[in-house]
Length: 384
Image (tube, rainbow, N blue to C red; front, side, top):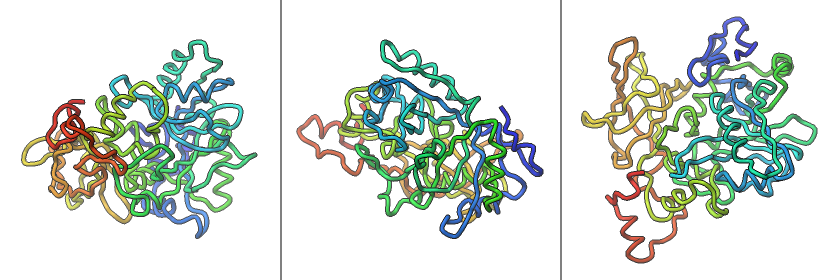
């Protein structure tokens, strides 16, 4: 459903997975600068995220049940504490992703719009005899994005705080340490409000000095932060290691769940077959490729462009998923098609997941089997 904020003067509708909200409101660069401004300097910007899906889980077994069927340890999740989970296929491929927060009476999952109904349906099928109820609340609740690094407090609306890139308990990292990670400077949270009150809630924030920004601004800062997104970076082959998603969404030491064998095997013995990269794009041609464009090296396709943005300081940038074997210093070419015409854009890499494919806490190899599986060029795990 379209947001009422699309009726604002100057609003330009977003497309693709952000359809239903504004791409920008007439001045995308100023909106992005306001969103990037540190909150200590005063109000910045807020973003209409009402296109995101909301699933509500109730019942006394809700946390232990979610703990058993997803990648995250939420069995004892405290009220107003945010985390993130993945639903994996039996082969360990990412099927669903959601931000998670519990308010003491219900557990709220915030996810992509086109994924909310399938996620709710899958959860409903997995209830069996557990005392839980699952409801897709997307038509009743809307999210507002705020550049704030804080959990919601008692008495405030349900709030999910994105703690990326902080490594959660039980997680690990393939990419940079937190102190060196560009995402450390990106505060972000989603505040849930009744959908009927969305316009009034936004107006109240504007009265307090906040500016309304579009998804152009939010996406540029997400890309700068190397933050993976289900609707962009994930395809049918994605395992979380490739996107450095073990930081926030996977607990490596919890009990069994669907896909756990692949998660543990790749972490302990193998290497992710692909890796996420940040790309600086040549903007001299004034035309940029779109998500889905091929990433080429030496005339051969080696990956796919997943996200493209225009950053207010960095210029044209993007995220791509490429083969692990692509040299980290290789100059790449992104090739796509716009209005029937071929578009070629040179791209320089910034490493997110290193080509060596080893996490920060990978166990030391022990014995011939471990050495064989972890040796460069081994093909067993690369076939995932």
